[in-house]
Amino acid sequence: MTSMVRGAQLARLLGHWHALPGRRRSPDYAALAGTIRGLLADGRLPLAVRLPAERELAEALKVSRTTVTAAYRELRETGHLTSRRGAGSWTTLPGGHRVASSGLWTPTDDLDMIDLGCAALAAPAELVPAARAAAEELPRYLSDAGYHPTGIMELREAIARSYTERGLPTSADQIMVTSGTQHALDLVLRLTVPAGAGVLVESPTYPNALAALSARRARITTHGLDATGVTATGDDGEGWDADLLLGSLRQNRPRLAYLIPEFQNPTGHLMPAELRERVVAAAHASGTDLVVDESFVDLPLDGTPMPPPTAVFDRHSRVISIGGMSKPYWGGLRIGWVRASAPLVQRLAALRVGVDMASPVLEQLVAVHLLAAADSIVPARRAQLAAQRDALLAAVRDELPEWRVSVPHGGVTLWAELDGPVSSALARAAEEVGVRLAPGPRFGLDGTLERFLRLPFTLPAAVLTDAVHRIAAVRYDLDRASRRQWREPAVIA
Ligand SMILES: Cc1ncc(COP(=O)(O)O)c(C=O)c1O
Image (cartoon, rainbow, N blue to C red; front, side, top):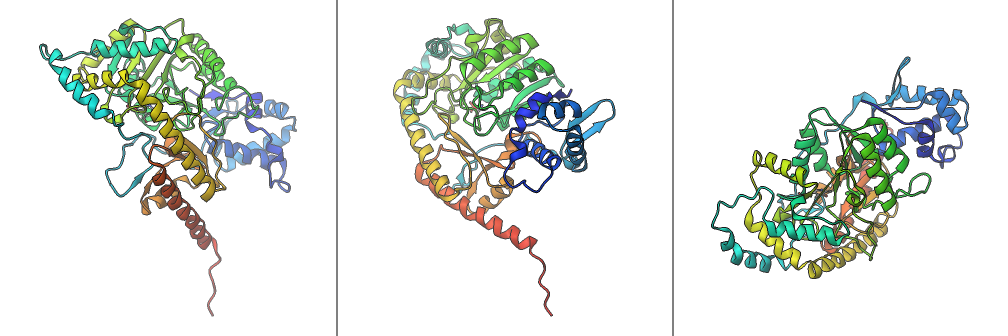
């Protein structure tokens, strides 16, 4: 299945392509081809989408058809476009290049390494007292076998209460406790996505979600997010282009869409209420189940007001919300959940029995205690994250002033736009100086996003500053190394 961009949509993505800096001497067709290549490289224009017919794009851009014909010809020559007579032209990458998106994405065990590959905080001080209190309560659960496929009732009730407090009335029978958000996603995919079914995701997105989708052999299409959070029209989407996102749902009618509306990993964008409502309506119209990953919903910074939960707009049980304890509390707890209709929860529980039976009772009791102390734990986590984010931003602006970073108003990550397509090379070089990085392509499907790097602010401020210092050192070394390669060989006579 290929999706299609219309002339007006591509024109909007292209923005001011004809007036880009440094193009004074290049002809229009070359500038147009170059800008399309740039959109592809940044993941804003997905691979395998059909571009508009030449005449349609020429009209939308108000240029001659010859200009578009020449630009498409150049894109074909560089391997960025494949055309078939009568069928149209599709975006591609040279040499059929693709980078596998699956693969292990785990924190490093090397204690000397500063691990910026992992975007999660260490445990809060409250964890040990919560674990002690949970152990004291364990005897209440020891008189039966201890398997609770949907979770222990007191935790399901606490989770349901937190949704109700966010303005989404929820009962315990709409909650299933899982072993982390990733497990919640995997179970939902097992139930709803048969092999080969279409799934829409954001680009960039969370790499382990891509891995889960690959494991289900889903056919993935992408919606390209704008790194800066401002779309070409400067309008409503905060990084999501409403027209393209809704258009993609309408055209492709994917079986499922996976979105991260709150402080999206990795961009940090927050989806506005109006777009949430439109996405839910479009998903209903296209028969698409909408999985919203709310991993970061508890972590607005700077007092950022939160839009209503996406499921508030759902009148047809289209929205499946998933979330967990990992980001506000601790990943090592392995507690997450699904919020869906009660019948869907029952179907998930039946499926889960064939996977892992149930989540551990003791950890669920620890989660109950942590949630009961949310009012003291979570504000402290937000204050810690805001201070660490500011330290990271200051270090990047100081040491890598050519990089563009916008300030995320929540979550745990910066999405930096680099001064060249060097993300993977930089990650390799940084490893040599003791910093583990998650390069841009890990967050996409096709080996694009080389001009981006995710930087989490989950480590202490001093460690982040040290890491940026080391990254800056190798960044400038990369330049020197490549200059050496390009220098003419010296003739010694
Ligand atoms: C968007 C998103 N979803 C899911 C997860 C995994 O969460 P958990 O540890 O609850 O499985 C993460 C962790 O980084 C994440 O960023």
